[in-house]
Image (cartoon, rainbow, N blue to C red; front, side, top):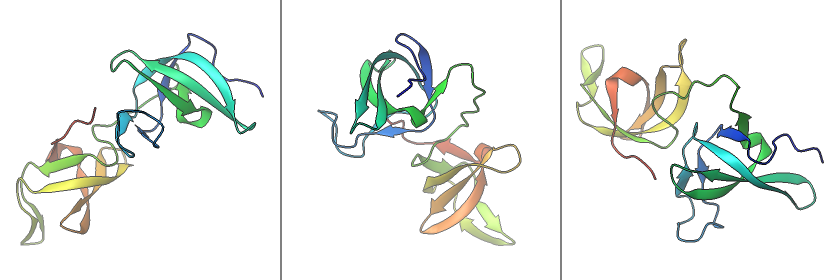
Amino acid sequence: MKRQYAFGEEVRVSRTIRNDGTMPGYRRGDVLVRRGSTGFVRECGIFLMEKVIYHIHFPDSGLIVGCREQELLPLSAPWHAGQFQYGDTVACRHALAIGDDIVVAAGEQGQITATGQGEDADSYTVTFSGRWFQVSASAMILLETPQ
């Protein structure tokens, strides 16, 4: 199998990496590395004789995480990270209304369920109280910052 990235090469993760149960000290599903983070290739191996796995060192967190090739991008590739990521908890800066009816109160918490919406990829699908809304990034603030 041909490897796309070389030892020491700096790469970017294209999606949030969560613990699949193999990272000691973290619960299954915990965020290990946020989408857009950069790290350096430390090692490379083959999993189940068919998947290339890279061990990437992320200096900002000190973690070394196994990443599949399709989760990585060369640092030279164009990248638009966006302000929020899937699963982020956010709050509305102001009330949201449909017509004259307020459907989301100012300060109400929601969760990002889809990213990169809209013409400029600056709006997000957010769940507030079980309802989905497409909301501009400028109308929300991030409440939690995963590790």
